[in-house]
Length: 517
Image: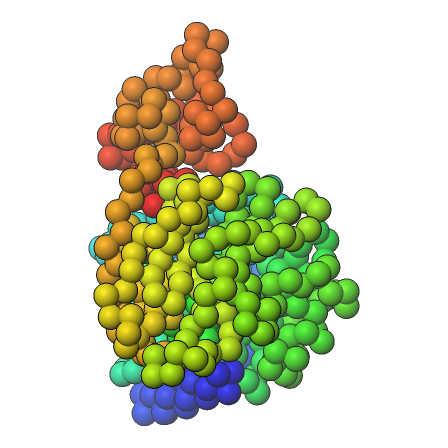
């Protein structure tokens, strides 16, 4: 599986090389203008130069990156950076990648960069950002992207620790997107999207750059320190993440295997030391971060290939004990103690449809948390159970269980999906599952519980702030729409804007179901 992913990355690099060789060359002198020359740099493949170059970490260089990023956010056509003394060599080797990876939210930015420089000293004068789309399409592309980043960050922000936030975002990205190698002209917008966070989060398909930049964009929104690791030989990039003062590797791409079954997410590459990431198939990487040599305590997640559900003080996930036992496990976040969580999954095995006396080794149950219930898949259907262990019930039963099994299960945009196939092999038939959601939905901003976010909710916050009205703990949680830890005037303003449909995507995106609805 990992070798296949490496091959995909290598093939992407070959396609890029061929496309650029047949088009424009890298850093060529095109013409003279007022004794200046114009260069054009387009990275041929993923390179770690921007992480290891001393020039790329100088104060002037970083200031130039910040200035170009600010201009890019406005779709500026040119940016004067002559004051920073950036060289042509830096522009050719590191600047474009430094810009894109420092600002993963700039989904309009192409990997190419055009610039003018003084031929006498090779100092860059002006940068001309290259865009995947023009400013007339800004809302069309930025609005859905920002809404997803806001939503996932808001959901992850409910958890108390950076560990839980990083885990939640990791599982979201791995189950939301699929690794897809782009085809066609590398200069096209869709090809460019496959290499950035938009392709991963909105189009739901990308290469390793898309996974890495999507993870970086959401962690940046959450205020979690993160960086990058790059392997030139693997033609691969992944994240580094700092948790409780220690920095680890996180490779979401490798934790979303190709070819995949829906709802499957591995955790072998989550919070790894150098030794652990090497054992997971990585080699020859560079990073600017100092990776801890101390393994994260009790890596219970290494063999879990489903979402890990986080509810209050507990984690829930399916376990396969290596023999003939499959069951759910419940782990206390504070004490790290795990216990068997009794459910109808106990003793269920994914048997061979042609020989029911034999079964496939491994854990094939997938999990989702929707509107207060934990949904888990069985070989022949889907069940749901409350976090306290009560109310376990059948939600869906396969109609053709004599000839197939449910090997994939996921929930997205209000719909449950299943992937059915006779064996654990991917590329099964993906079907919509007729599962009715009956529990009441809890929506951020809906303080009065009427199912809508409107002016009445904003007024309730205002009354609360002047001590005219008391709010329950649940209402305070739903009222903290900007996720800053308390209910204040800013939350009231955001709700008013939402109710009036003003700048919706940039504020809260859409009313958010607390439980991923």
